[in-house]
Length: 216
Length: 164
Image (cartoon, rainbow over all chains, first blue to last red):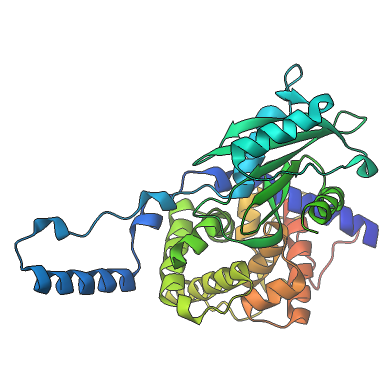
């Protein structure tokens, strides 16, 4: 086979593998993956309990080990963003709550709700115009979604949220959820995810423009 | 807390494990063992690429599991030596993707899946699996070629070729 044929063949292989296995990403995570506490945590907890027991006597039953914290059951940011993309990007009549022509109001409103000074990146140079934005429920507070569209009707969404407790600070990364590609990064104040059904290279170009505009 | 840093990677670890091991229970056992080991060894992690570190732990656990089943994973299996059970070109029995994957040598499967599913670079795969980049590349190309042939229902290249 020629190199070109190889390249196409291998891209097909990647796609086939993703199609087959990507659904695992969204399967509910078995509880024991959270519940089985690390051994050191048990030791630490035991030590605390023994210490407390010595201090206050053995009479206080409320010092039983508490069940593991359910708050660690967090869907990763790129998956949250991709799901929001899948829900709203196909909308024909109501893709956004506030349209781009009211951009100033849009940014003010979402900034206020998220308690963050939001900025909307301009992606016209990449061929995408702002359609507008909407407010979404996040895990523990509001999330903003901005939507862009290119002349062929292809849509991108930018998901902006305060970092949730389980979100790891991360530099620029890529994730894939079904057909939706996501570039995301999480800094101290804010998590961003750009989602779209574009191939990775195309999306990377747009995402790096977003990144440059938001992280000067 | 350590564990919260690891949690976001669980879906990716599960996807990779499912493809690597083939069945759901076996795969989730691999993930579970990996998570426990990662937590035990977390103090050894130096801030850097947490994903590659987690996948390297999964690799070690996987290798141990293979050893426990008395399969030697570190032996590079020559394609010709495992060509026998594969259907030939005129077979209508084209293997499906999952079965084809499982008939790759485990070390080829690991490299192929880290590249295809996790989108890792050769350097990242090299770190995760603890092998030189050249080995990553040769395993990848052999794995890809073999998978292609299996999916096409062809016998992999061997010393003997059918001449039309």
